[in-house]
Image (tube, rainbow, N blue to C red; front, side):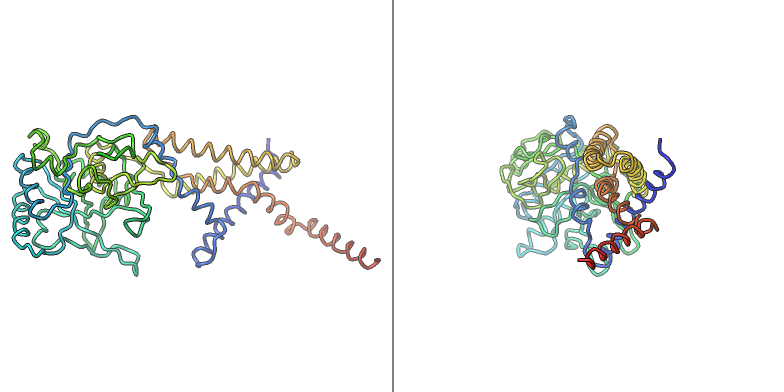
Length: 421
């Protein structure tokens, strides 16, 4: 179907597009402008797989292994009272997603909280990884005050692009562990899961991924921000103090204490994130999930051993190059065989190609819990049509003796016309 000359041109055109992308990456590395930044940023910010979580996926079952308790704006004495109430019903593990970095003027309240913590058999409290902007890495860990640094620790850091609480921050993944000064520190959720089921936690860590995509199950009360509220059991402050729960709800379960608003009617943004469950996929107005609920989703994912796998970077590059070559090959055939149809056909095929890739990403993610990474392929398809016109109409002629002769002939003819005038 394709003659040797078309194949050679296709290889040349593919190499030109790859060179263009490499050149823009080099200019970015050198701190200069990048021509493809708008394209890359626009495609990179689009996570069509979010549609699987928010629209396509069927309602997941309610997780009975994890119970959350709201600490609201309670004092340390009151948090200690909550802990003591829950602890008497024999939970398997208690995790506290709250820092107690400094001692209060109420020293008796601090001592009461310390006693409540020391009475818990299996306890995990949060630590915080400290990021060093000079080295571009996490290099230390910050803990609560030693009086409250009881039990085991796990870092509570969640991955987002936001620098402050009120910036737009989407949490899609998390680091299971980080090596700090030669020692591995586990994430808070992984440490809690480890105390509950060491074998499943070890199986999860054996995947040895630097970041894991969170396979979200659902939310607690979220004021209609998602279709999956009520997928976890949560107790409000008043529910605990008034003991509005059965012992079976707590016994042998994981209980996570954390901030979920002053009460469940509070729409506070504090410690709250956007997640793929948010029904407002574009132009989200309000964050939909508290940090402690994200930790609950991670724990649920680990205990169910229901993970999301992701295409490797190398495989993504190979896929991008192969798709680019096939696209360029077909566009080259159109360029030489149907030149009058080139613009219309290639633009239509580019739109179709991008649509097919996005649909493929969503369906594979939905059916197989596998996230493909075809951003490079999408960029290459978007560049292919116009790039080939530049490649064949300008670059190829510059390297062609006949092409150079033609342009110089036109230049000489024009000069001769002007001289005669």
